[in-house]
Length: 378
Length: 207
Ligand SMILES: [Zn+2]
Ligand SMILES: [Zn+2]
Image 1 (cartoon, each protein chain N blue to C red):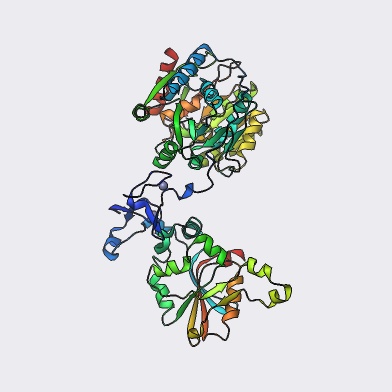
Image 2 (image 1 turned 90 degrees about the horizontal axis):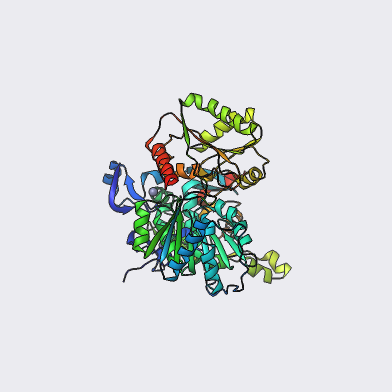
């Protein structure tokens, strides 16, 4: 029988090397390292409380999720941005933990983990929570594990309930190795969550003994914000950004300005910084980004110029959004929906504004607006 | 650009894409054009410790990545990558000379499980000797102060057969050169002449 990689399930001879005539997989060399202890005992006496009560629809959906899991099914939650996805799975997590089972919450991005950690700790006050990502891998075992998809290789056949948030985000999306590692770490059931699902994902979940549960309403009952498109040539765009930013800062509203590439963002920020001192630029390459994000949340900064790194996860009250060069090819429908979804997420700030600045209205811009309109009508 | 069916680049694992001319020249190409392009060649000689050193690459970019994957992640399949473009040069440089690989400590060798330098040379059937040994900190710690001072950390079994030979010492990276220095010291009066062949230069970076 041919060799099958225990980590990523690869069995293609092309990617197999031999060390002292023992086969090894060359595809997942980056996924070698310490593994978690599979016999870890979870604390069963749980103090579970939610900071805010769930809305009626959230309550119903969260019960639906658990009843499906109980029947041995897997679940894909399709919920609009700001529906309170994370809270939807707390009930199921609680039920699994109570029985001493292993529960994990994975997402493609480490920023999301850092952002979510306090919310988990508030809901499960007496449980230990490990956050595992990048260089942060000292503690692998805890009652609840929050981790990036990359780190799942440390948990082969470990999770009785594994939640995968933002299934459609880079780098998990369309990455065969990360897919295999995900499935490899599940002992019983999984829940996937996303705001923007496509046919491929639907087929995947159905072929995996799963059901799709949808939530088209934000937890506070407010509508999704429909982006406004400002058509203008590229040379005028910085001017329009300046005008909008001035308006928002005057009314004391925090602003995200999305730029397609790091270079575009840097240049735009250089210009804006001349007029508006109180801002920063963040990107995947910026090592102080978590400090800047914290400062922004604490209202110490008025605005952040960012690449798509902040398209997901980060929630800030009363946030307004400007997308600079929204017709750039890196902005597909999903990304634009996520970006627009940053706005109006808090129950005491349900509204806000999203501006797409574009030279022309691309197909993705149009379909993003149509989809959001569609959700609002359901 | 031609993509060769069912073959992948040994280095980047993507489908092997090479210029048409290479499909004619090379019998079995296995590294893609774009990987080859990112090699930082050194190809210069320098006198260090009063001996000639010859460097093939700089310790950067793709060659550095290869070495880390090869040594630390034990991706031994990478062995033929190192001298893919330079094996002829190495053969010429070492013509009529005996190659001695620079030793690692036993501890490092055991951890790795293979002699990485020999493996790199073997990939192109270049003969080499690994008679030199290096004692690690462990062995040295156990010796008392006096013996420690006189203790050479390089030793070997019988190398009298190299007595009238011209030697090329072979190592992967030159950083501080401590090991090479003690090796040169050890070989003094034991062989006819010594030159040093280094795959990657990290020594010049430090200066
Ligand atoms: Zn593998
Ligand atoms: Zn390549």
